[in-house]
Each structure stands twice: as C-alpha cells, then as structure tokens.
Image (cartoon, rainbow over all chains, first blue to last red; front, side, top):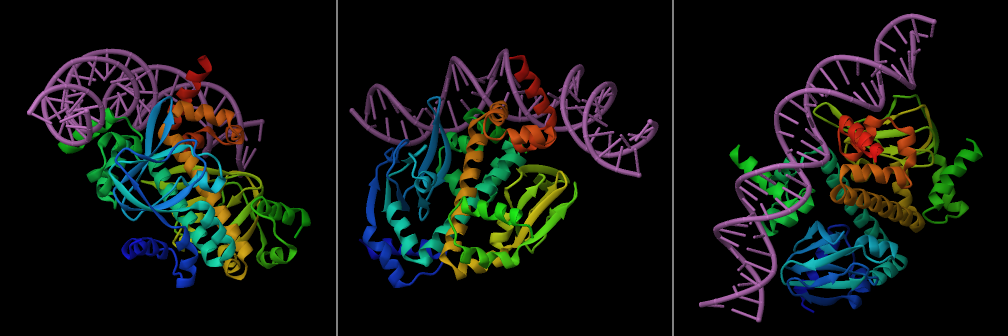
Length: 196
Length: 196
DNA sequence: TACAAACGTTAACAAAAGATAATAAAAACA
DNA sequence: TGTTTTTATTATCTTTTGTTAACGTTTGTA
C-alpha cells in the first residue's frame, strides 16, 4: 500500500484527534484498497457487512429508493469518509445504496474492526465519539436549512458555501434530490436566479 | 434530591449502556434541580455556558430565530435529554433557544462536568459516543423524511409513528414549523386529510 | 463513428404552498 | 368572571412546485 494513500487516511483521522504510531498500527492491518468503476455500487440496499472507507480519487453519491425512485441525499469527494453509517452502528441492513459517480479509488476497513478498537483503546473510542458528533452537526445544519430556507435559498447557499464542489461536479438532477426538489423545478430556479 | 427523580436520569443513561454505582457517583455531585414556568427560557440564543438536562415533568420546544421569526424544530417531553447540543460540543454560543411550553421540572448538570467524565472514565466516553450516534440517527431519519416525503405524508407519519405525543400536546402552529410548512398550510393539509 | 442513453431546459397544466386578512374558538390570566 | 392573548380555520390571491411531455445537447459506448 502506498505511503501517500495511507497518509490521506491518517490525516483525515487526525483532523479529529492526534493519534500515536502505536494507535495507528492498531488500524493498519485491516486496511485495504478498493477500486470502483463509474456506476459500480460500493454498498447496496439490504447489505449487512459494513465497511468504512475514505475516498482517494473520484466522487460518489448515496441514495434511498422509494417506490422505485432513487433519491440522492449525499455526495462524497476526495478525502471524505464514506460508509452506510447508520447501518454500521445499528448492525442492521443498509437502507441506502452508495454508488460511484466516477471511477473511484478508496481505502477501506471494516466497521467490525473499528468497533474492536473502541474496546482496545480509549483514543479510538474518543475518535468514534468525535466522528458521531461531526456527523450529527452536519445533519443538524442540513435539517435546519431544509426547515428554514426555501428551495431557491438552499440552491444559492450551495453556490456560496464551501460546497461548490457539488455544483461543479455533480449532475443537476442529483443536486435537485439533494435540495429536496424535482430536477425540473431546479432548472426553473436556476433560470429565475440568473435573471436577477 | 428525590431518589425517584435521580432514578429517572440513571435509567435514561442506562438505556445507552449499563453503569456501575461508582461511575454513577462521578456524575451525581453536579446534578441539580431546575424549575421553569410556562414560557420561561432554559437556554437562550447566544448563551455560552451549557447545561445538559432531563425533563422530569412538562414539555419544551427549541427554535431558531430568522428575520425575527421563530422556527420551532424540536420538542422535548418527559424523560428526554435536553440541551443545546451543538453549542455544547463546539463550545460556541447557542444558535437556538429552548423554552418551556408548560411548567417544567428538570434535572440538570453541566456539559463541562460531563466532558470531564469523558477523560476520567472510558464508560462515560462511550456514553458520549452512543448519545452522539443516537442523535445523528434521529437527525438522519428526520432529514430523509424532509427530502423524500411531501408535507402531507410527513403529517400522516406524525399521526402514526411513535410521535403522537407531539400531535396531542403541542400547538399546531409549532408542529407546522416542525414539518417545514406554514401554519395555514398545515391547517389545509388537515382538512384535506379528513375528507379522505 | 454511429447509436443509445443520460442530461438539462422549456412549455402547459394541475396541485399545492406562501402571504395576508378576517373570523371564531379556546386558553390564559388578572 | 370578564378580558386579553393564543390558536386554528377559512377565503382570496399570487407564487411556486409537481407532472408530463417534447426537444436539443452532451456523453458514453458498442
């Protein structure tokens, strides 16, 4: 495994808390590469065994399926952690599917292994807490936006915030799902916004 | 402090994980009663020092303020933990206000103290992780509903799910906020639903 | 390269939601 | 008890969204 790739993962972990080499080496035996072609699924609805991963290259989306319709609700880019998180922590089958939007390279490790680190080392347990808090904060932010902003305001926020990546690299009909409107409606919002 | 009230808190904690008497006694010195009258605020926007609490009696709401408008996004009932969670974990001023909808009795303890327990005991650190995961799951569930269901479907879900408490005990215009529509619109949804 | 699939825009119409105001009922409270 | 205040409904009008379909463009791939 390339040092550079491992460092991407270690750096991502250390955005939450510093870890020693010994702590790091508790994780490394379980790390492996995964490659996905565009359109390939990383985690499928109903799937049980759960991996965590980090995106080295490419981008991905996750979606729920309802009445045969796919509803995309999140995107993953380089250096993002990726997992069917709620399936992993509840040990239930995944309710969502994660799919590569471009060819992707990932590093992966099993949630089971991470969970065993929670028992072995308080530092990893703390990492688990900080990750959960981080995820919760992102969801709260998102939910507040859905409740308090109009679709147009949410679109404008997407253009400004630290989320331009999404607008630049993701097909618009997926973004429409993400904002909670139909693709047709997002197209109209865009033309409305442009006139101003 | 009454044994019965302390037991409510300990039971709530033990829904996440069992704790020994010694672990419990790390928390107890910091616990105190709080009483609020209807309309009184427990945490105010901009406030910094953060308490965690558990509702013994009564119910509460929390809301964001935007352009002078209050947007209610959550309700708390008996035996629910209550805090301005994201303010506590980020040590930033609270962006939301928590207000008593009825006269309330709570038990409270400081987040600072809880945080010190994270350092003192792996069990408490794990408690912190499990609580964060629980909050994240609730938010994900909520967000998926906002993205995938119509306002009418969200209202119907509220009637069925394990959330009847909200419909029974909370004024409708707050519920409208919670569902992401205006009070007028919720009233129309109700009359539409009844005709069926 | 040629064909098919995916994507984005626009149009037309129906359904729903927002805004505002009027009214009535219920709850708080002095 | 009587009087505010809060709460819910209804009506009207405007704006926005959903739905379906058509069209052209881009992209992927055989």
